[in-house]
Amino acid sequence: MIKLSPTSWLAIAIVAVLQTVALASMVYGRVTLLRDGREIVAEVIPVDPRDIFRGDYVILGYGFGRAEVPVSADTVQGDTVYVTLKPGAAPGQWEVVSASGTYPSEGMGAETVVLKGIVSYVSGSAVPGELPKAAVRYGIESYFVPEGTGRELENQVREKKISVVLAVGRSGDVAIKALVIDGKRVAEQPWL
Image (cartoon, rainbow, N blue to C red):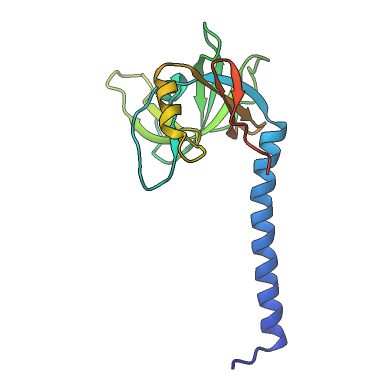
């Protein structure tokens, strides 16, 4: 049996408290985003891949998620980027206005929204003076669903019957709050 000194017990207690605080802050951040984030509805575009090892989930694509955004010349894969969107011509469609490595401090209208994403890849521009473009992932590209419902939801995505309600925080963080199927809000994410 190993005997621990009082100092060792204190160190163990401090580590346990720090881990608990870190976990609680992650949960609190998610709850706050879903509860207080601005809601926007985004049209979903069909995407087909499937992974049998991750359980039932639906892969979701968005018009703004497929658009490559102009970025600065020093942007690399893995960088954080803030993409400003404005409503498109049809309900649920959003268009990219701009992208930046920092959260925009001006030029924000009441109708615009900023999403924080991670650069997936950067494609350089062959045209002199033109900025390179980047593909961005926002962390809202897959949605876990109750067992046995994934295939049906994917079919509805292909038939364009699904939209997604997104919660957007003031810092650009974004999470899926609910699915909308044929105009009816379903699959609401609980705060906890």
